[in-house]
Length: 181
Image (tube, rainbow, N blue to C red):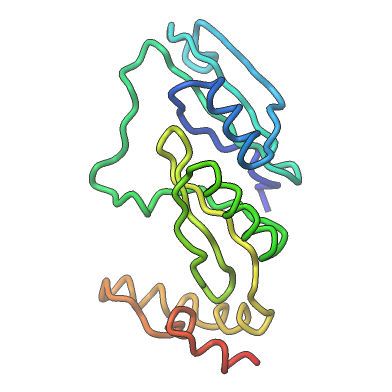
């Protein structure tokens, strides 16, 4: 395989300092690197920026750019707010629920937990408007095996009809609780 892992994922932020402090306070993600330049290394374009890197655990890195000379960032108005998000895995349901309580105590609105059969998750927004998901795995190898068997059939049907195939409807209709005892 060509790819070893994701080196980092980068998003834009309104304020790098506020962002770094928010992620450390609410998600225990430590700031590991700050880089600032007056020109973009890949293009040479004059465009000052602050680029911060946060430790997302197990060698994963989440990065942000603050671009003070650019217009304030928005979001793609043609894409629903629930679509684009960053999902971060937590160790267990206990950790997930503790994180939910901590976020809500800090005044952050949290949706969930939502049961996706393979995992349960909560959703909330960072101070830049990026949607985040914390997920705790709850699925079984048998569930993954069942999904593996139908993945291409589902994708082919979707490509033809643009309607949700029913091969894995058990994930959200609750049948999985009986099917995979």
